[in-house]
Amino acid sequence: MKKHADLYPVYLFYGPEDFLMEEEIERLLEKTLSSKERGLNFHVFSAEENSAQEIAQTAQTLPMFSRYRFVLVKEADQLEEDQVNALLRYIENPSPAPASFSGG
Image 1 (tube, rainbow, N blue to C red):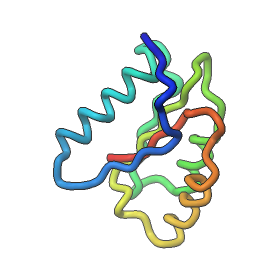
Image 2: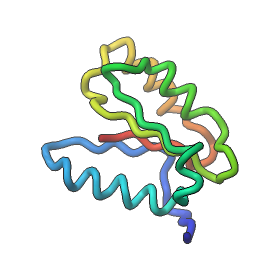
Image 3: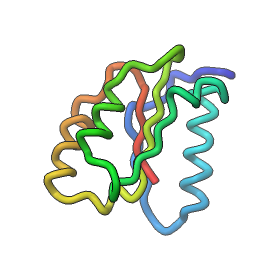
Image 4: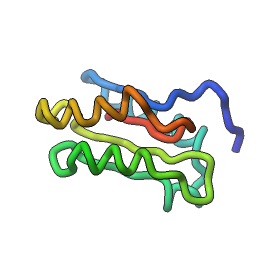
């Protein structure tokens, strides 16, 4: 698996093209985590079910046995304003390693 330097710490995907978003998420996963690394470093959250604090805390946690941690937030448009502000604090100052991604 080849690692790439052109990764950003946060991505936002939105719009009606779910298939294209899923395709891009899979492409980013392939660039960052092997199938073994995904068990410990790939986290999927639902904005309807998880708090922004929980999401940000996971994104700030150092990856386990990997260079990257991949955090996927689904239904991000369902976050309440105070939750958006809490998540925005992380987005403004993300983990120094390109370890977390949001979208879906």
